[in-house]
Amino acid sequence: MAGPGLLPGPAEAVMFAIAVFVLNATPGVDFLLTVSRTLTGGARAGVAAALGISAGCVVHALAAAFGLAALLAVYPHAFVLLQWAGAAYLAWLGSGLLRQALRPGDAPAAAPKGLMERNRWVDFRTGLLTNVLNPKVALFFLAFLPQFVPADSPAKTLSFLLLGAWFVAQGTLFLLALVVLAARLQRLQAHSVVRRVLGAAGGLLFIGLALRLLRERPLAG
Image (cartoon, rainbow, N blue to C red):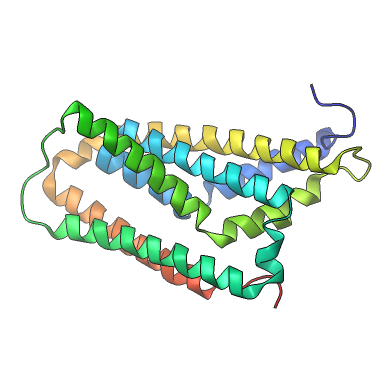
């Protein structure tokens, strides 16, 4: 159990939980990827992607807690480098969805068990990379979490890590709930036209997110 002063008081904790929920519920890369993978690959694919996203948030929380994320704000060139890498990865994902949507043929047959297990790892890795390569997430942790670290905390780094763990846990629960909701819509995938439309829409959205990411600017520099 956390000692006194390590976490914000009840009122601030409620505000933190509400803010995290609003951020998670706002459609973005993580939201879209979780829904897209669930609709195209099933609930297990969505869960794998969601867990990959959560793992990426852990990386960002640790980086921000120990000052690594601050480098992105202080050194604009580092921000731009990560920004281009993230945008390129999103554009690659989007083009893949578009190619799959435009490819002739019926719905794909069920994959063998070994291939399905490998695909789950691919889904996890995709979620991880889309999150880690997004500098907006790094700067979010750097700007958002410190606001809720108690001023009288005896160990501010520990407080930061506890808030980061809270954020990751709440975000993971939200994404898993999103997988459950999206899985209920997966039966629409049986219709090839609907599957193609959803795939093309997802591809265009990922490419749009890549372009939007390139318009972001670092906090300093």
